[in-house]
Length: 253
Image (cartoon, rainbow, N blue to C red):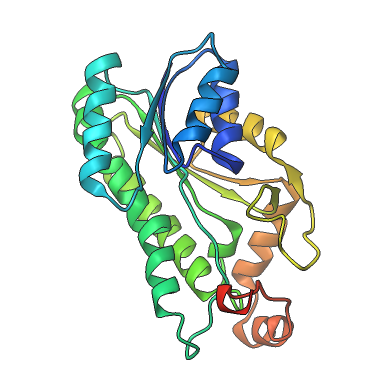
């Protein structure tokens, strides 16, 4: 099995890469921090790990990495667009650059990750494209307009792509995590219901990828929460979440 995965240096990406390594995969790993990719390779000496140090907003570098991995190991079986960032954001307080950066990484970075591989997968009539979205993309969370918008965009993009590729043999898998214990969530100053360990998430997530499930929410209790949020009337949602705890803005830290 050959896997190309972005955002691999920590959190969900590291856990997913470790789970794929446990299952014997050849890995192309993308992240901005070279030392962490090197640490991962040292921790998994039995596996072929090809590191690519780049930012997913650099579509030219990302395309070059995709071409290099394909030249070395052939077309990947699974491409995982996992790179993502989170930041508190509020309109009217000078957070426009935060909105732009979060959207560039979480949404456009996903599009750029898939772009070099879709043609070859369609031609081969095989392959799986996986996007890491979030339950936060189901409804707009106060204080997280940038993050919620980026994950909502990811969910709709993945749905569009799935329908476009229907009957081509290429699967599109959407994974929507709830609260997973990672460095990204460690600093959240509020209770996180159904908090799941990253390793447990990775095991179930890779199972979902291999089964080519269209849409999976993890941990499983968050499925009910996401379904309820989706159908909740706007007036009731507004009232219920008006005083919800908010992720601190970078400018406040």
